[in-house]
Image (tube, rainbow, N blue to C red; front, side, top):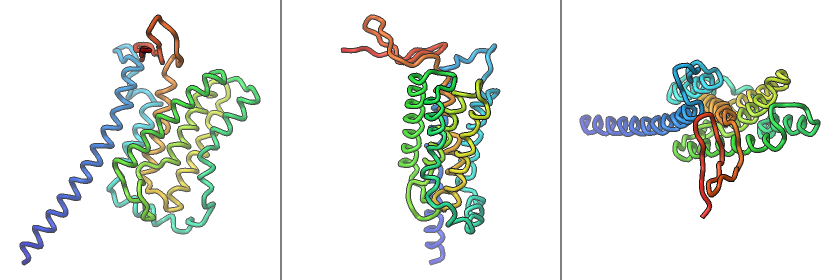
Length: 252
């Protein structure tokens, strides 16, 4: 009887481990995509700064790695318990706060504050960054299907946090050279969004870490693209170009 119970316990343990390994493999595969894209965009050579010396790439990758490392670590449950006193503070505020950086950018664009790009190109970068980030977030949510601390589904990664940091990074890229204080202001809203998601028991800390990293990484990669547009070249149409590559397609 004890032998059968031991076998059953071992089978359950192995099945759980296989599920965890599968989730880690999915996450790892998604992490490879931006690294490979960065290699294509930058055209890595021996005389160029490579990705692990690039702060705009290494910082978000480190945050994503921490999110993966704490995925099964008991520290995330301890952190969750420590937020109990704040459960009813600013409830639902993060639903609006995540869009704060985008609102700031829209306001200063209306005021015609000089930035990196004109309004037309700002909208292009914004659209591509947002669609790319949120597409990856929801593909991961569906693939991983992690249970939220409050019992809900689709916990990993945090969409609110990814959205907040993506819009903050877009604001940063637009004004980092001309108005640095304004450029960094969006990150305070994004950070508050992530903290409130944990405090309100909607997400584990690893969800927020990975979502923040992804939200920073994708717009930083998108802003490495030199040109975004559709330029007619005979029957070929260039969607975007970088130093090394062009994405082209044809009309039938």
